[in-house]
Amino acid sequence: MWTILFVFIIIAGCGNTYAANNDDFNRIIINPYLSTELDIPKEAKDYLLTKLNHIVVENGVGGYQINPRFIITVEISQNTKDIISGPPQMIARNLELDLFIGDAISQTLYSSAKVTLKGVGQTDTKSLIDAFKNIKTKSKDIVSFIETGKKKIVEYYSFECEFILKKASTQASINNFEQALYELMTVPSTCKECFDKCNDLTKLIHSKQLEYECSDKLNKAQTIWSSEPTQSGARKVSDILITIVPIGKCESELNTLRNNISTSLTNDQNRQYEIEYQKQVRLIENDRNLYQLRKLYITEYLRNQPKTIVLTRIFWR
Image (cartoon, rainbow, N blue to C red; front, side, top):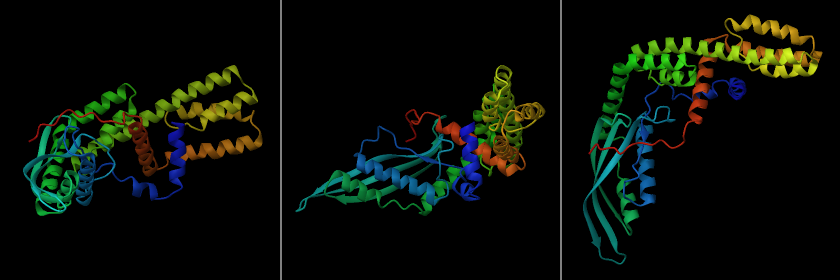
C-alpha cells in the first residue's frame, strides 16, 4: 500500500499526464494472441503479431492488457506455394488468413473474417512477411470484423452484469479488494447500465478497503506505541500512520494516536509528519483522486499476477 500511495503522490504532481497515459480502464480492449502451435518462422510470426497490434490500435480497441480474456487471433491456410526459378530463386505463395475475435476463457467466438494474401520472397520467412504486409488494417472487412467483435463484447457484459456484481461482492467479503475492483472497473463504459451499477459498487468496496487498511495499520501502530512509548517508538509509529488514508470509524482513533505520539516527536519531525499526513487526507477530498487511486490498486494487482497468460487451444476455424 505504501508503494501505491508513494507513486500516487508523484502522479498527482504530474497533472493530467497520468490520466492521458492510462485511459484503458473502462474501454473495450482486444488483445492480439498467436498460438504456440502456429507453425511459421519466428520472424514472420513476430511480424504478424505486430500487424494484429496495428489492427486493434488503428480500430480503437488496442491498449494495455486490462482484461486478457478477449483476443484477436489467426489461423493460416496455404493455398499454393510455387518455386520461381532465378536467379535469384523466389518463393511465391497464396495464403488465406482466418481472423477471429472471441472470449479465450469461455472459448466463445464473437467475430471472424477471411483475408486472401499473396507474398513473394527469397525465403519462406520473407515470402510470409511480404504476404502479411498486404493486410489492410482499415479495410472495410476488417473494420466490420472489429465492430462485430466489440458489439459481442458489450453483449457479454450486459448479460453477465449481475454475475460480475455478485463475484465482486464475494471477493470484497473475504477482503480480496483488488480482485473485486478489477472485476468492476474493467466493465466498459459503453455498457452504460452495467457500468453505472459497477461504478456505484466500486465506490462502496473501495471505501471498505480503505477502512480495512486503516484499521489494520492502526492496530499495528497501536501495538508498537504500547510497547515502546518513546521518541524512537513515535518515529516508528509515524512511519506507519503517514501511509494510512483516514476514513470512517478508523479516523477518530487515528487522530487520538496522532496526538499521543506528537508529544514525543521533535518540532521538525512533527512538521514533516503533518505534511505527509495531509497528503493522505487530500486523497479522499474528491472522486478524481479516489478514482486514480483505485486504478493504481488494479495496476499493482495486475503487475503481481503471472506474466504468462495460459490460454487453452482455440478451435475457431
